[in-house]
Length: 202
Length: 198
Image (cartoon, one colour):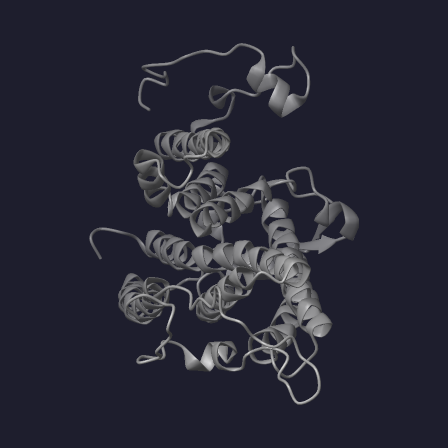
């Protein structure tokens, strides 16, 4: 950041100007065209943007790979693929956060671009007040959403209650149109001891 | 604290709360559309696998939706508590956009969510499918307004500054500002969830 250069770079001429100005020859305003006081932290934005793009590429690659595996009929057997898909679970969320960081940090030092600086936008609270509320927020968030996420993971681990192969009536007089037991979704939650002939181990 | 100024702490607080918040709506948006597809497939094929998956994911959807609402409330309050000068300056644009979000999207989602979660045996199949579609639509409309507001902060237009405050002049210009087509990001999450689910 100090020397104002990129140490290791691959240059793709024209592509950047094509995306941002929709023409091949218009110049994208370079960072150095802006006074130093109007520049964001380029190190953070550099990495957050690239992590987001890399994850996106990986998702496209996995999509193509899955298509190919489906064609060869090994989509549900290929261990490497299944393991990778499992690990990619949070990738969408990570990519969203990285993209969000890129837009928000990339806009700094402005809160409304060109109109209001972030430094002029905050309320005049003291350091003590901000420290107390920040610590409280962190504690409450981890407690509250920790419990929430834990409950969600418990639902996930329990897995769907399957009724594959079971016969049921398709409605008609005196018949329920659908089996009532599994359908009382939300308030039932993790109904322990719910015995079901076809769910293994639950 | 740790040599930070009050401004830094306010920014950290916003970054922390918004990073927590964004996760839940992102899952909500992706899951709502996925649930819509599952229910549609069940109605079309009568394959019980779709119905079982629907009930599995709708429980997770309910918990996630609740956490999204709770963490979202905090965001709205912070504009007043920690960023009052921002709200004073730009509230005439951001306030109405967030209000539209509540009126057109959140009401839609929250209203039909009840039917979707508790109405399986109480309303007809068509009505239930309609509720699921409305919830999914609500999440997308919600995305529309929030991104309109955020994009306006990136590329503001359609306003005049009178007495040190932003006054909106052309709402269409405000909403459809140049950086608006951002929404792609949310699709990433839908993809990954979809991939994992099947």
